[in-house]
Amino acid sequence: VDIIMKVVILSLLVASAAGFSAAPGASRASSSLSMSAALIVQNKGGGHGELGFQLAKTLAGNDKITSITILQDDACKDTTEPFMSYASDIPNVKVVKASLGDDGMTADAIKELLGSDASFDYIWDNASKGATGAGKAVIDCAKDWNCKLLTYVSSAGCYLPDGTFPMPETTPVKDSAGQVQYENYATEQGLPFCAFRPQYIYGPKSNKNDYIDWYFDRIVRDLPLPIPGDGTQKVSLTNSEDVASIFSSVLNDEAAAKEQRIFNCGTDQLVSYSEVAELCAEVAGKKANIHYYDADKFGKAKFPFRLTDFYVAPDLAKSKLGWTGAKTSLKEDLVWYYEGYKARGGATKAMDFDKDNEIVG
Image 1 (cartoon, one colour):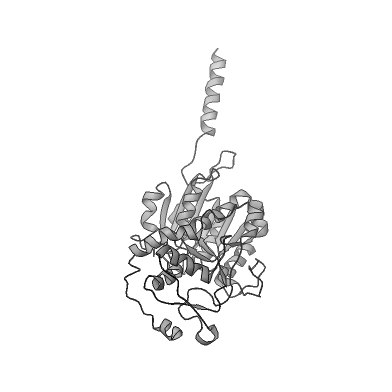
Image 2 (image 1 turned 180 degrees about the horizontal axis):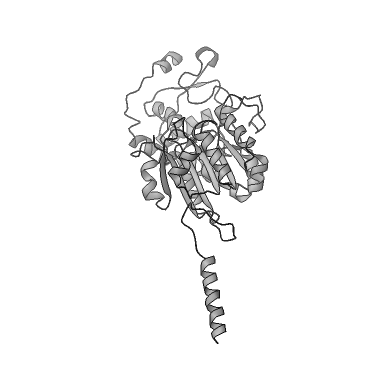
């Protein structure tokens, strides 16, 4: 009996040890029950400012991820969105501040901030603009941690269009672009790595609203909308929630993500410049007074998009990563966007339309 009791007790102790979970971000021994810690490196704001927040929300519902840490650029304004919503909307996410804009940032400095015992399996870098400073440090950390996958938020702005639209991932790039240099350095380090190249982004907690605001600024004041060319140029305007779902799709097939390496990132619901005007006017209960102008004569002026077609499609993310497409639509989103625009004082703020007047005549 004593022998049987000892065997039972020993079995219980082994089972208890196997079920023990380490603290979030802590070093983990390799086992089928090991934690999968995610690190999101987040910039201070701007066009990509909401992506880390939305990605954290998305990853929180993924069974593959058991802890999430945001390494947040300390230059962010905590009193603005999305940063002011971290505590209320993603309370289980650990947030660590760092001077990511410091060119002297090193891997050792990041490790010290995150904790000497911290290690991460999956990293999404939504802050670095090149392979120097914090950018290089994040890549070096990923290598030291032997991470399963480093995912970089690059930019479609690095493309040099060659006339093919939507622009495929094989479109020539500016070799001098910091994002391209980051992609190259990560690849040279032999890391399991992939990058997404997003375009124009909007979202419910964005702190950059220039693109769509340009339309409403004129529509609510019953002013003409000076649009270059004939307005048929296509644009990819993507909700940040859909962007986050594309980023997280790498977890569907990590091998495919590493093999493809570069993915375009954007909605599969393209619209033209004129269609954006009509959609915004409809939600504001106004008529869109579009004035098409000669771009060769006046250039870009204050128009928020390129003069010509400049858009991508998420075909590879769909076929290789199993992304199921955008869950939102610009037409539906413009309802809440317009309410937010008015709440921000967009309809009453002082504005300069001198360039518009010059174009319209």
